[in-house]
Length: 129
Image (tube, rainbow, N blue to C red; front, top):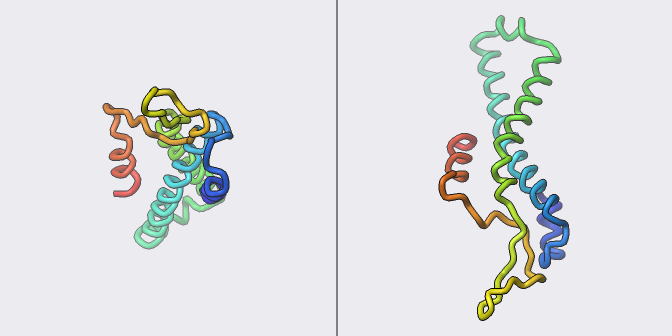
């Protein structure tokens, strides 16, 4: 999100917010991207039902339906973003001659992409295709 990105420009190295915040930031960042896409899909489906099946939509009207839909969108988005949070870690740059990690080079990122789980491909196909 924007506040986190602005803070990176202000103070990028070393990453000082800890592993828990690093993982939570990755989870919330991915989930908010997914929920925005799913919200557009939900609005489009609602408009489709309103135009093609107006009487059916009238029988389902009320406050509980949109609350359930929004809660469902957030649950699906958070569950789908969990793999990104699991594989996000605090990484360090290694000093080439000694292969020792430089403590002042800590940064929060997902550099270790799992080989058997195509996260980026699944994410793109499910939410953006």
